[in-house]
Structures are given as structure tokens and as C-alpha cells.
Image (cartoon, rainbow, N blue to C red):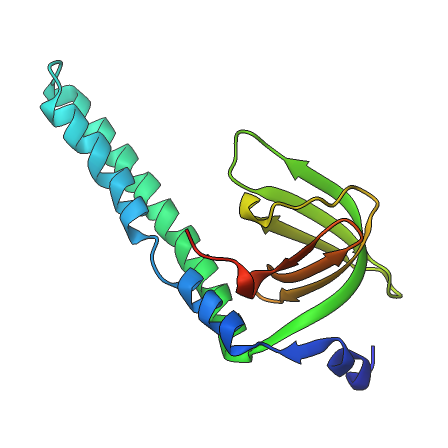
Length: 168
């Protein structure tokens, strides 16, 4: 792919998109801390408190806390890289797989680009996108390349703009 083709498929992030990415970049520590503190406090104050139960719960809580922090730092690093780069990429693609789950608070999207050679894109999207797209539908997507944050989707059945979405 030539440099001019790459430039045609990118565009600077708007100030509003940068602000929204910055919102995603902050927070998340309280949730991780809750996974550390809540089980330990629960065991200590429960009626069935036994000294033998405390150490396994403390160790397990610390491991979960550490894994959550590692994952959180990876996501934040990707978002920070997108903010620093200041660009979003565009692609025209066909939706290969759309997985909705009642168990998880997100969609999984897999798309195959229409360029040659074709690329596969995988995204995780929040349900607040309220996506009405279906498998095999053709979409135009703009995304932040490092974090794979969807900036815009335009399809026959829906349109979504990340900058217009309100953080809950």
C-alpha cells in the first residue's frame, strides 16, 4: 500500500473525539480495587470467619487485582497511543461476525475489508452503540488504530458517531 493511499484512509481526530478518548483513558482503578478489598472484608466480617479461609481469599484477590491492573494498563496505553497519534483510520468492510451476549456487556465484531489484500478487523463495542447492523452488511468504519475504538460506523441500517455518545 502506498503512502498516498494510507493518507487517504486516515484523518485527524476531532477535538471532541480526543476528549472522549481522554475520558476512556481515565478511571477504572476503583473497580480493580473493589476486587481486592470486597472479598477480603467479606471473609473477615462473615459469621463463618476462620483463619484458614483468609489467606486463600487474600492471595486470590491479589492475583485478580494484579491481572485487572495489567489489563487496564494495556488498554490505557493503547488509548494514549491513539491520542498521541491523533488520527483515525477508515475502511470499507463487510461484517463477517457480530456476537451479542447476555453474559457480557459488549458486542464482538469481526469485519473483512474490501481492499486488496483483504484485512480482518476485530472490535469490541459497548452495547450503547445500539448497533443495528447484521452479518454480511457492508459498512464504512472509522476507528482509532491502536485501541480499536470505533469512531464512526455508517451502514444502510444504522449510523454511529463516538464523539456524540455520552459517557454513562
